Length: 628
Ligand code: SF4
Ligand code: MSK
Image (cartoon, rainbow, N blue to C red):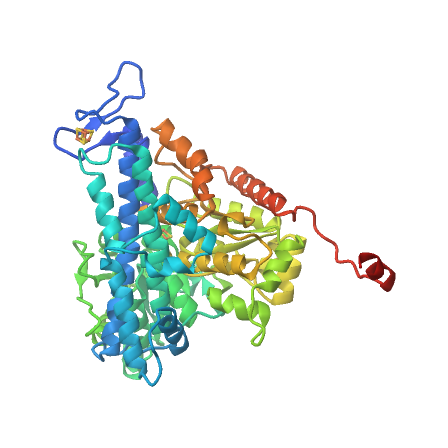
């Protein structure tokens, strides 16, 4: 790209440097027109905004606003899925169907719906309506918070941070950060926790569960990743963004024999679909569709010159795409009314017209194949195998077998020390650090030290490119104990659990481990931690906060948005732990990040009394008598 003089995110970052110090420390406020105000870190500068707000208030308000935006993105995604399920039940969404009736019925029973003698559509309608009601609910607790361990629910209730309604928490967060409303950083953080929890145990969980109902609950599946999955003799279509409502239909339409024939008539061997970002994770998990790359690969993918169409929906889509695409034959197609980009073609995509529009988009790609210039095509060869598609339900069956499904083997191997602990490593890429490097270094250090790593989002794609998700080669990077368990069960040491909204699967997996027994009564007692080593999006902050508020120690890399307030940072890095059992940390060096996580895991093991691996002793009769 440099040779061809394309500007990349990395170069645009350089043109922004030095970035504003007030912005980096979040000590600037533009919340009213008496401002913008800034707090000076120097003795002779202003210490208060025009309204009197100090750095604690300003930094806390900025932090809460970011969480509210992140939560709203995930939750709006969940809302769209609930609306689709309702339309499917009413037969208004052509092309969609209910793929996992078992999960639908399980959800119905969880919601107290009488399923006896009911048609599947009636049940789907009820489940969809209850999930949709969670967004506008004004009182009570979100229904999915009841899934958490009882001790956790009590902690939230005592602190009065159990989320009420998903939209309500976002709106209240915006209200509280309005000029002259909440001026107490601690109180603002209580709302930050409640808002983030409404994402993790609300909007994201709705999205994950209902996507499973509509598109199938993922089971381990083979896939491939990296630019080499683009094919120079096929029509290449990239799906990018987040919601599988679009990408699933593109996959269905790409199998239409008429369209495949049309592609052949135009000189291609067929239609090749590839994914970028979380949409990629969604269709990989359910169909084995290959992944081209993660967030920072999106611009590069176009410069291969081999992409006929890049179709996008919402979130993490760079505004630069149409400009880069204009140097090639590639068409950028936006599909959501929420995301339009000047220079892109807009094809309005709704649940009612989904299949028809998906076919229209594929036809556009096929027609565009003849405009591809051979001399522009450079497809890097690299590609590698991976295993993806681990839902918390599939982990049950893998570990315990069909008739003894359980988390027992996992808990036992944590207790006996073969698995030292569990880490959720998730999140984005950030051009402020070398692409994928921090993810890869951190995860390799963790698995080498027998920590089982659960992944989602762009982090999972980074580690897939490094080979950690290959069920055979991946084992070479694991420590002895972890390798032994993974070999016995037949899983890689790094478990791909899906997209950003699927971090709710990690919450559920942690809950399953607690409920299995032997590792304490709450998520906060588990030898477990979380990390987003290259985070950049506001969604990552919401995810991190709901993990902290669910009792997990979470480390973020690259940069940290509260350093401008000593009091707030101390609260988030230390004091919050006394209240919710989890806390934040910031560390940009991956080795030190791993050390923090290992130290935390070892401390939890010590508290559980499992810090020394227990040898299994076979008792003879004399020993048994002595016991009695
Ligand atoms: Fe300045 Fe206060 Fe207005 Fe923020 S809310 S811009 S600190 S006057
Ligand atoms: S896509 S939010 S860059 S993980 Fe979910 Fe990747 Fe982060 Fe977007």
